[in-house]
Image (cartoon, rainbow, N blue to C red):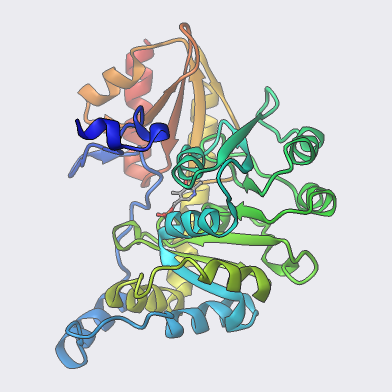
Length: 351
Ligand SMILES: *Cc1c(COP(=O)(O)O)cnc(C)c1O
């Protein structure tokens, strides 16, 4: 009985599986609808023809990519760490700070990976409910960190799946009142204007995680990074696996940043499409729409079969049950064409 040997906390765990959907209208995972830019594609082909060195292990420190990120953010290379997606850095951070039984405070609803990663690393997730409009309950978060003697506080802004942001002043207030390391997950930071990266010197207990998976369209390459004071970055290095980020991912992420102008235009395009979708969704009956600063929109509806009906039309969105009468649906912003098809489909289904 292998099961009896599995760690007790994991016996009821479900392994992460997700349908691998191709060639359909895929608005379920907050990915970018755009693939590599022409410039990046050209560099990749040239590199394969002239310099390819896949027989060698990658640069374990992702030096070129970190240098490029450091100059992009106007920080020192010592302030940057790269991971196989920001997921890996979240895991590394838990490994560094959690002793068995330590508490990690996080918002709910939010990214489900947080609590599972905490449990995998022998910690105890403490979930603080967001307010009913999904704004952050600042005082409750501070109180919960103190009462639970938190080892880590996780904040997600814009929050997945609710789309709202934590304002700079709110984060500062939290950081001034909470002593433990604070992980600020800015996975969707490119779609809003605020970031805590300029404040890493002033607030040495914060570390900001970002990713190339969403705004930059590199989900298939798994590139994430953290920016923080040298002391907290050095701490995360303690648990970073050697050679974590593969050579091709390091190269392509570097070229993407060097082609920033194109990517910036794509981000503006998606932000405009987000406003279009918000407006259209708000005009529909039986749907409550939450404002968003990310590349997705959360809606609440009592039309429980909406997701299934959309799937019949080959449109895929992400749903979260709320209670027996309502569901929450998270819709990723796609291309103009995809968004139009989506809106027309919802209109037809609700008719
Ligand atoms: C998608 C996502 C991530 C993970 O991104 P990767 O870099 O692909 O691991 C992290 N945090 C949030 C909130 C996300 O939605």
